[in-house]
Image (cartoon, rainbow, N blue to C red; front, side, top):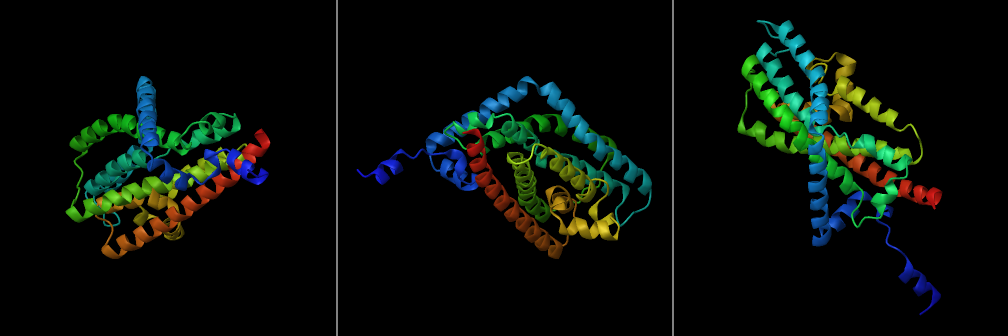
Length: 294
């Protein structure tokens, strides 16, 4: 055997050196890693349940801003319509927004930077699973715990406030893929920002900026249709509306067929960019991480 062949045979397999999405596909093709991923999800969920009171408090804190704007817009509407929306439609919009916001919010992106900065990524890179699995397991566990609190609260609020929800089979069928794409866009957009921690110690500040833009442009302060000129144009063009507001607008019947097709196209376009940036940041970041860490 030549030296070159020996070098190739001894070359270790580094999980973190490949893009997260190709690695995830490779993992899903092997039953052993798939079982490991499911075990990781179950273990993460069990650990979250041990601290469910703390996470219930977090979930309640995240509900407060939409509840405030629900009361503001419902009171302002009174017995008349604002921007074509009645009081009951504002109630329906914000109750749906509470659930969509909780489902799409990616709290795990805030922990990725800490794992990188404090060297804990080494532990994840040693696993036979891509580190992306760790973030996804926390995502799934968090959704279950948060919704266990949110759903009863929203149901009680619906019984008290009596929303006007104009549901149709078409709206529901379009809402489900829009919700999934909204979560994926919000997760991977935050993921590539979090991976900037490979180069900058204060990358988390960009996640705070993202949350602020989501709050302003994703339909939380007001439905996007009611935003004034420049803010409305920015909301339609930038990715933040498609992380929260777009699925809510579909479910509440505010999107016509043309707007639906255009919205899905924009949502997929921003998601493709987020996936590409995540893959690039991971590949380049792990190389730098290995070089610095030895």
